[in-house]
Image 1: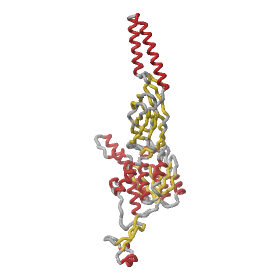
Image 2: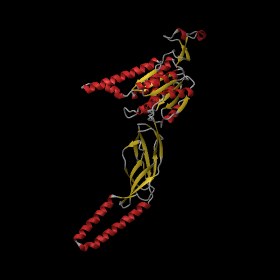
Image 3: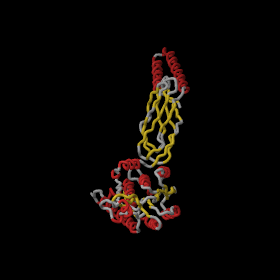
Image 4: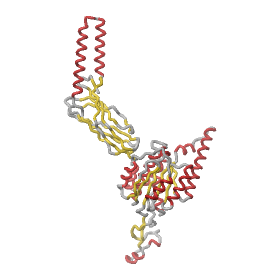
Length: 435
């Protein structure tokens, strides 16, 4: 596409001024003809030069994966392979699911030179995104035209749930400062389930920890030390139904859930357990339980393009399918957004799962409810709203009590607190040996 540049409008304005002068002084008509002819010739020659010269070469360097809601840098590389310096305006065609600023960018490229402009993008939705092309506008040699080109530079990017929390956990685990993340990893010496090692007796060890055979051999009191059980299995049941579309902040409840799954997956794999996942109420996916840190990447690939749907969850069907797929006893973590009207469907499904598995129900509570419950009451409308919220919260708590009374572990927390609370509850279950 060819577009007129600023100098073209100045040229047209100059010819219009000469025409006005000719209308006053008719003897200057030949000068006007000459001016128009020269102007048209300049426009034509500059147009031919613009469309025949070699365009710059473009490349894009973008990460193969982006975390949701986190800024990342994208670098363009433009090379002037032509025979004259170029004045450019550059615009990168990024997906609609990405936000950025700073376009168009203006660049000056000398002959044979490279430019590498940098800009930041923030992915607002998960899934596979495509950067289709780089658009450049090249100013013609006489600066009368812009030659607008779309250079086919295609890049595919996968947007994953925010794995920054996992990276932070890994760093804190290395430095032995897990409490900075709010994860209370307590070790009770000698009170785990699996044998860990023999060591010298320490004050506070129980008599049943003493290994009398080893004690007689070395003539010292030797104790057995135990650790939490390993080789257990954790299965996530992920609700992809309509309530998971709710949003309290920049992320939906569904995205908060994915972040929590990712963090607990990392923690459980480090504990020596196997992790799997099944989704329901929409896209039905099944990832069998596997061990090893490589399973974090498998979980990311299974989740990155998963989206909530307008469907209502069918808990009974999801529980039945899980029992068919998962034969070995496991910790089943059901992640959903609970309402009291769901209990008639949910409770039978939980009872069904509990026959074979240990079940943890993790439900997210809207932050708007907590804020409304503590809001000041200044008039009758405020009083009615506060009373309605308190009534709703009481009914919700009564629903959760019925679930707990059935022997089901329960969590009811705001979405931003789900990750840490879920990990802490998992570690408590490990320490208790109930799995």
